[in-house]
Image (tube, rainbow, N blue to C red):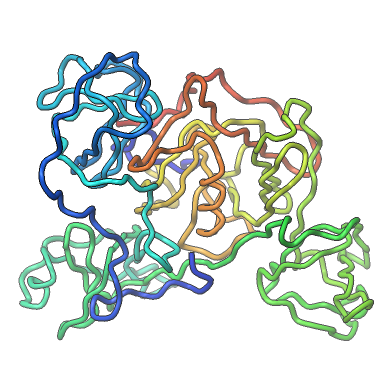
Length: 474
């Protein structure tokens, strides 16, 4: 079994307050929008020397249908730095001489990269940070998978896919059939006599009746500047369904309150042991000035880790604690944001250590390895940040179990939290790009994965060194 999240071979490696609803074209905007059509031709840019720095403003924008590789130099033997996003405009700053590239030739882009424009078309800017989200959107797609018809037998619906919505309405033979163990992405819905249809980016239509449409978690972590924690207490979240507050630390004590799943609290971290259970005191949990008590199994809380002497006072880094399933965005030695995660479960644990984010992808599919006992394939995973081999921080739209171990080794975050953390960390993926690797002068953000307050080994590699099993495939 693969003990991490893996991107498919064709990858470079691998927000509202309410739940998203299914979008129907009859009443809502599409989930994603294509770049506006090019209006007129661009002036031909002037080629400049390859060692010149990019100007403050781009000389134009280009679009490639399937995205294109960004190289460290204007030739295909150079190190690969990243990839532009398919069908999205990206900025170019100069045209450069170089071999094996027809058409306009090579262009200098951001991050000291070079792109072959052989298959590029003139695009209309400005370039946008990926993934693009419309107002009120929490995720870039509608996600759905074939329904499980019988949990006892594991029977899964056989779902046809049609060339387009007209073929579905006409009753034409299906184009193909969806794979049973796979999450699919769709950009909009359509309702006709045939019922609700899910439409993908290639205009293929799938009947929705036998599909389970994902309802992603709306959970979000705690901004400590806006919601500071009282001295001596710790930020905590209810993970019981529900969590019950009692007058005394005992299961037979009168109930004071019921706390909603994933509600944010503050607790006294000193455990109170009663029989086989541990309890935490919740100040004001029974009302102003009145303590209440919650059993430890129903509550996760943030545990500070040992200080890292190497961290600069203004340096941003990520601190993951597996025992309580939490993540903190740190500034120097202080937390700025804390939240819940889901790390590796069972035989697919998340590795401990000090790491760096070596590659980020705005959107990437992820799948299990060959012959996996628990096969999976999920399309369109947003905000992916690889820090060790195929282990990544990423959004999970398919569950709401944050605070519990759930993943195949990666660190799952809610969509809101994944987007927030991704926006803060290095390397910064330029507008119009889907992925970027760290490089000299642009190292990835430090990530510490620990259990409790124990120190961990430094497992960072020299910048640019890719460990066996770490590098993805084109």
